Length: 158
Image (cartoon, rainbow, N blue to C red):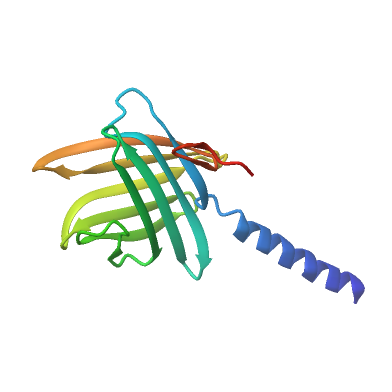
């Protein structure tokens, strides 16, 4: 009987650890490479709220010094949710697999871009590929992030 309870307890702990170790959640800091695009800094984090819901917060500092902040609660359900950026922007999130999720960005219901975020097998890097249109012209952008708790002002202190 005691061995059976120990096995059940160990199984529950392992399951809880596997859920807590979901690779997409955490804080990510962008590594500028080559064509930096419109940003000098980009930090984003995804926090698991349970039941497929999450909070995404991000801060971007544009090359011109403009600071763009986002804070939104959404779900991996494929439906449009307010993006946290205002101005009629929405985002629909779909979980592809354990290490990938897709985002469809829209403004006033019209598609603007698709984003695919892929976390590396070791969980230490995330690649974001964005494809869309800006001012009527197609664009594609790839950004690499590292798992790091930081801000656009520098590394966070634990």
